[in-house]
Length: 111
Ligand SMILES: [Zn+2]
Image (cartoon, rainbow, N blue to C red; front, side):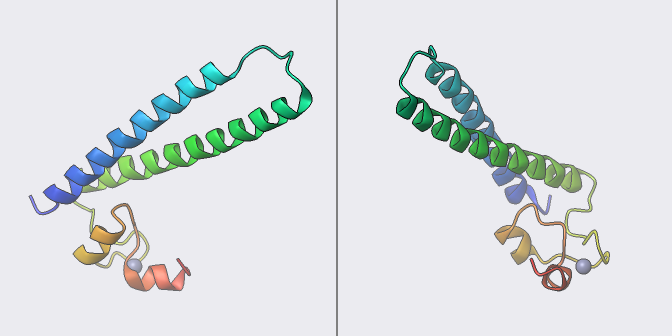
């Protein structure tokens, strides 16, 4: 299959992200201790939690993108632009494995 290596990379990346998400979940549980700490310490912890939540949110978005890309590969429309139906170049797919736009549409969208 034409996109086997890109597909393997996507699957690998997905596993990495899922592992990271799992670790992040553990981290949040471990860090959320009793509430009797002084304010400064709590503020720092809240900040850390926010960073962690932001990271896991972006990991989830990325996993979603990867799943969509994998579905597009299975459906045989991985290299067709969702906007114009034109062909997305292999080079572009290599660079941005879960893009859904050809280079022209991406430029038009200011991506
Ligand atoms: Zn296009």
